[in-house]
Image (cartoon, rainbow, N blue to C red; front, side, top):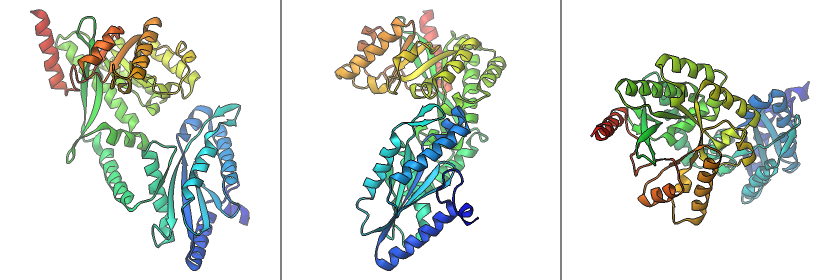
Length: 436
């Protein structure tokens, strides 16, 4: 009974209760003997995807395998605990200094980086680690979990699969993030989101043939908040689902407005997050929006990143086929920046490959970027797919891409993303010019 009360039944590791006892004892020993302890707070990156795609049984098997690797990567005197879900903690005790704790954290990251064989599947998982030292960071051991959690969250923000040491500045940053998150939760109901539209130019004709819808947050105090500052929060909180649906609906309504005003049909490109893409109700919601706004399905282009495509190939193919059956267009965004096998590309029912701004930025001077951009355009053409280059800012970039026969381009050279009224004015200006 005592064992069951103090250990996690799935992994056999100390549970939260025993972890706190071990941490308190280690801190007391450290204070009495002028020693240092470190707490590493670990969270598996994107573990939810494993549960959602392979099932909770496989997810549990993966957690048990992670626990075993963690046990084997630390000293016998250290404590590895499972705090719940995909959260683990490691207490490294009795150190004279904390100089090698970074090496220990990297060892854990490396240990977890190789493939796991679970449920007949090969699964890769990474971890984000927050580290705090006692008594260096704070004189109270009870603050260690809070500090390590803050540092772990910071590691997530730095791109995951890394470790971060706690600093006092992180608390201030965490407070700002909390306030931002609180405001974000009310932004949709308060109608604070707006869509901007960046034109896509057809190279042979020079006409505007499409736009990409880009969300902005018009915060009542901060003004326009850049997407990079709030979209990750939408993902973490799950708000990306209702906000993403709002984006699709608003973008389709805008297409309807432009059609009613007599403008030529434009393809409306909308980005889908990983969470949106795998939502059960996505297809029915889009169908309802198309019916509500009365626009042809082929005017809506859904953009998904290469990494989303490769998360679960079989499921991805099925979802994409459903989109195609509805008459929707599909584009792979930032093609070439993710890890994928070209052999899968022929299986994906997509219409367009988008060349990342990363490859366009240094064109034509950078030979490697030039080779990649050329290869993507050639691949698209040979597979009868469309090609779009984003982030085109100079005439030299445009000339190079045009020489490679890139079909469409977007970027500051043509126009920045515009609010609806300015986009409508630009379309009207183009229409009048064409009429004369």
